[in-house]
Length: 315
Image (cartoon, rainbow, N blue to C red; front, side):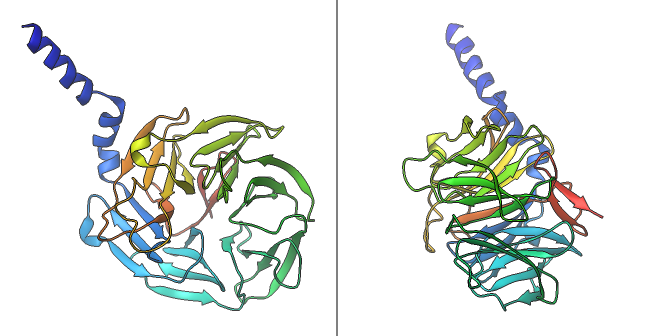
């Protein structure tokens, strides 16, 4: 009887643990998402409930991805950006006049923001705002920084920018309003920051291998990572869901043969519990860099992060 009681306890613990229960939930089994794979230079659509609709398309090198309306996703390239249909991955438009582009993002006003460093005859981080025709409408320069990854527009119309071991907030007139040091044992190449309504800034820390959160004074007060079995290597593209959970891509290195390494799609609760993860098929993926979980999002509308860091439609 004692053995049976212990066995029942062990089975119950497994079946009703939070991770198992949430992973088995229909909301996860029905999930669909877009993925940017840096190792293969590939864009993919994945539906867990309708895998027959999945697709994979080779794309140019570059960074970031965004829902921009009309059923399209925008991806940054090394010469500008492309827009592709979410239904098929087919390219429907592109801008190739800006070689040296690091990343691209559509703003709330409908213009595109391109990111570069020591670029366009300027020293430092350069943000170019262009319209659909490629006409430059605005230029912002942060001369003290010569390294950039992604940029995010805040609800206050400033920008959160990652610059290796620094994440900072910059104004539209080139002033630095706030900054914090990224915690990492090696050069982090910090990837993506988001400003939240309470004034804190949340960060995908790159080689810091964690999600880091900083207060208004730039002090690190929360760090989320692991567990070891997911091989937390380089935390890159990040999305905050409407329930406050954080989905993040766990990039595993350059090249086409990284698909066996780590679990590359992770979801954490706000207090750092790993509540869901997705094991990539090494026959289809190598090293994931970006993710958009599509559940509940209207792909006919442009989406930008709101004051809570959650993707919000712009009518």
